Every structure is written in C-alpha cells, then in structure tokens.
Image (tube, rainbow, N blue to C red; front, top):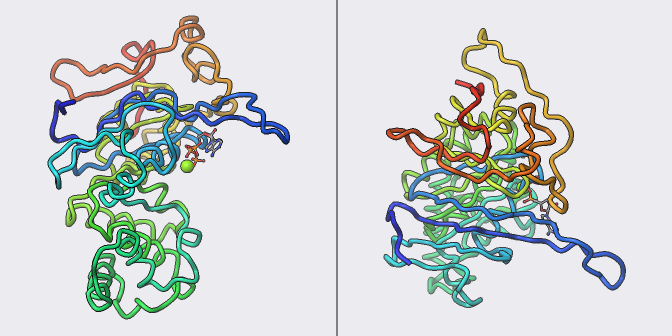
Length: 345
Ligand SMILES: Nc1ncnc2c1ncn2[C@@H]1O[C@H](COP(=O)(O)OP(=O)(O)OP(=O)(O)O)[C@@H](O)[C@H]1O
Ligand SMILES: [Mg+2]
C-alpha cells in the first residue's frame, strides 16, 4: 500500500473499537459500546493534531488504539517511518514486533502523580525504556543519557536520584515527558497532558512540548478538553462525537469558521480575543449520546439546534467541504454548506 503523501506519518483507516457490555457472574455479553465507530484521518509528519470532544467521545480510546496499547476491533493504522523509510501496518504486527516498534512512539498521560511509580527514582523512570528494550548501555552511559534528557525538559541532572514525591506536579510532568522521549520517538500521544496541572504551569509545559517538537521533530496527537489550549498548541483539530470524527480542519480555520453545530457549541465557551464582540454561550441540551445505543441518523441530532428531518434518518458522512482553492475542511453535517456558524478569533 503506497502512501499518497510521504509527509503523512500515520494513516488511520476505518478504525473501530468495541467494548463488550458484560452482566452477571457469567459475564454474559449483553451489548456493545462502540467507543470508536469508524474513523479515518491522517497525521502529518511534524504536526500537532488535536483531538477534542466531550468526556466519553472516544479520545483516549483512539490514542490508545494508535499505539495498540489496546487492541482495535478493526481498521488499519499505517505508519510511514522516516527512520526505516518503510510503511508498517500496525495491525499486522505480532507481539514481539509490536514491542520493538513501540520504540518509535511515546505516551504522556494526564496525571503525573499516577503515571510515575513512587518507588522508582527519576533515573529509573527515565531510563526504563532502555532496560525494557534491552538496549546495551552501561550505567555511566545511561546516566549521561538521563542527564541529557533531564536537561531537555529543563530539570537539573542532580535530581536523577530523587523519588517523585520530591517534585511538584509540573516537575513530575517534565519527568514523564523525559521518559516519553527517551528513545527519540517520532510520534507522541499526549492525553490531556496539562489538564491536571495548575494554570500557572500549564503554559510552561505547553511551551516545553513545542520546543521539544522542533528540537526532536516530534509529531503529536494532542488530546484535550480545553479549547484555548488546543488553539495555542495545535496545527489541526479533529472534533469527536460519540466515536466519530465530525469535523477536521486547520486550527485557525476550524476556530474561525466552524461548519459543524457541535463544534460551534464547543467554541462558544472559548473566550474571544475581541471581548466586545459578544457571543452567547450555546448550552448543549442533554448528555452526550450513549455509545452503546446511539440515536439513528446523525448522532448529534437530539442536541442540535439546527436539526431537520433528514438528520433523524440519515447519517451524514465526513466529506471535504473546502472550496477549490481552500485547504481541506472535513465535516459530517447535512447542512454544512448552508449554515453560517459562529467561531472564535
Ligand atoms: N475499558 C473499557 N471498557 C468499557 N468501556 C470503555 C472502556 N474504555 C472506554 N470505554 C467507553 O468508551 C467510550 C469512550 O471512552 P474514552 O475514555 O475514549 O473517552 P474520552 O473522550 O477519552 O473521555 P474523557 O474526556 O472523559 O477522557 C466511553 O463511553 C467509555 O465509557
Ligand atoms: Mg480520555
């Protein structure tokens, strides 16, 4: 399978992840949660693609499937590795190959208190991948590597022998970032990496992620709730709703010119740079749809202020709504070219 565009690091095709709903002692399967319900997108080399959407929309499940930290139910995940110059279909890798392949990927989690083992020193945590992958280094070489990584995340190398409890939330996240980039991966999934941190340190961590991106040519999948953060860090944004991507475009385009009513509603809560242009916050009615039992047609229709008959009956496909000389703007809404929705500058 040839890549149309070699600038794509990763191509995801029709990815699905079902979780069984089990009941009783015999764990009888009584239903299926379609946590990811057929998503397709690319991640371009060196970019930050943000994944946004309400709680339960499937963001974490997507991030974990892309690393095969959990097994996707079906679909293709194709990596175009610069280091080897070859394409790899992640879904075809057996366990030992997958383990080897994971060298190219890093993961940063939301809570740096939960993600660092309290009984391991910074040295042990940051050098963990070298041990796991049996990379042949002696203690002295490893110490040099860890010192360099700590320098990259702006922590003093003297901290190497301390335990996590000695550090603040922001410092812990720096340690977690050093661990994620230890083997110089090409791709990093950051799942809400600043949501658990004080607002005052969020910007520092975001700036660090940006610096590391240019220094090590990293490609990020950046999962977040906070759209102001997403606007700052990402090149493109994918909006998820109940296991589907409903809109995907360049960040500026998506924020300034949303084409899906769900995106408009999410954006209505973001502060505008021109406060005098008063926008009303759109209150979404009801809860996010149940992925075990999504409504027919467009799954957003019960909460959509613009819904019409067709929205109840027909599921809209994700299509490129960009004009001839415009950049790609994918949206899944029957009326994407009819509405004039309000964004944020
Ligand atoms: N291991 C699991 N077993 C069963 N259901 C799961 C499992 N993991 C996730 N789900 C379900 O899949 C759906 C998507 O969950 P996911 O954690 O991916 O959402 P999210 O967008 O990351 O939400 P949040 O913003 O709260 O982190 C939810 O309905 C969730 O309950
Ligand atoms: Mg999540």
